[in-house]
Image (cartoon, rainbow, N blue to C red; front, side, top):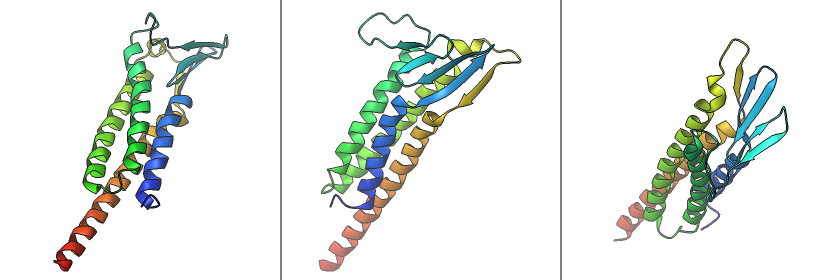
Length: 170
């Protein structure tokens, strides 16, 4: 049954995971220069310069490039895993396990995102007039985590219901 509420929750969580790559996660302002960090790029508003990451070329942008790549790759893996989980509705135990794996991956994604946003080169600027504010992309993995947790609980409730009915039938 694809129309179950947990399938809808997993689909929304997968969309949020993909959206996390595109929406800005953090905004830094120092001496009039603004940099916006997202899962795919770092944008400097002062010179309209966007630094995209070349996954097959040289990684010389900054010290956290591997965490940035991990953030991007984990977002894609999580979205594919959650979408695959939707279509395994006949095997609820496998669905529960995949949701648990998805939860662990989302936690790893949040950790990578925290590392990139809080340990980038722009954080070293500091000073009294430096500001740093979270954006909508910072909240998306947390919402995805909550939705995946709720979906996992709903799948477990379905499994318990099916097992109780099977016991009554026997």
